[in-house]
Length: 252
Image (cartoon, rainbow, N blue to C red; front, side):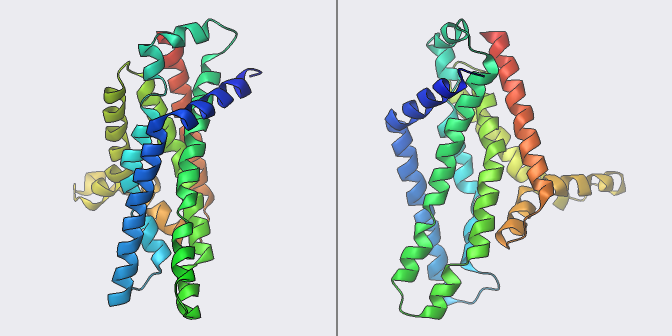
């Protein structure tokens, strides 16, 4: 893995120089800003049983479905289209080094974008003179747990995007494939659990609840840090990255 740091620096530099990176970042912040603004307006007109931080993280699936494909669809697909992947792998570089570098670069940027949204509650609290309102807005346990969940689950989502990109030479196909897989990961378990398939399928409900990202998000945004989601996201991210490395090596 001695060449890994050089590849990672190259990937981070490529992300910083790509105009699409900044377009995706601006779109993400605009979308999350609109969501947060809508939450604050709702809080000013009616009462809620949970804090605004918990409501804010309930919308995490929306940016995930469009941000992750944008960040990852060109990762391997573009390399294969330009035939630079074969050249890269002809040097003393392994497929796993290439995949890990592309994954870490996209994941770091993904986490930075999410962490930048912490400015929303601070700016809102700064604009109010009521200390009680400011304390409600800056819910430290909820934001801490929420951001841990976002970065943790992002490992699996970004790994999925890298895997989808490794399967094709076309960015559009990679993006659509990533979107489809993420849609199943995010909404599939919840949709299946809420359906009534009879007694024969009841044994599936508990395992599917373990895979439900919505339940993980609720626990973390309440400040409850559970090790089971940690195991789920880390191990599955590593598994998906391993599959992506195998695909890259076989098609190089």
